Image 1: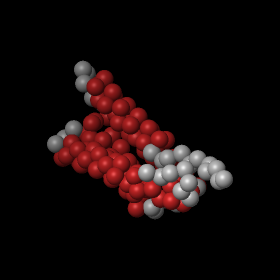
Image 2 (image 1 turned 90 degrees about the horizontal axis):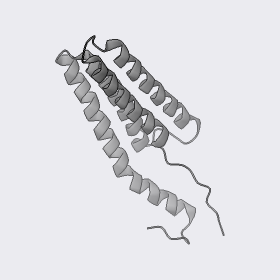
Image 3 (image 1 turned 120 degrees about the vertical axis):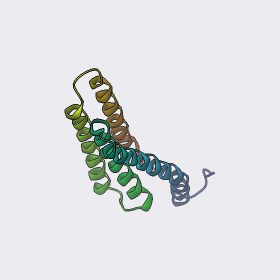
Length: 136
């Protein structure tokens, strides 16, 4: 664990090392969600499959690019967050459009909304907040 006397660079590196397992977990979770979307398309359930596929692919790409360091700090991360939020909106809209008429409509819309909310939460909360480091 970092101590108060450690230089800021060491604390930053320590935090990044602690974040890697969580980011890998996010890649796995969103990858499984994308896989379930593909399986749903093959089985002929597009109303649930397409939003799952959109959320899974967008989340996995975002998490993978963060793990690999492809997103440098600054504008690129903000653009990636915006694109992830846009994918969440697209997943919700797709769920609304593809929802079947009848008793299953509410369920499909609710599942799409939960998936879109999870992706939006990851887009907003997935990056750690940079804090100013006080030097003494």
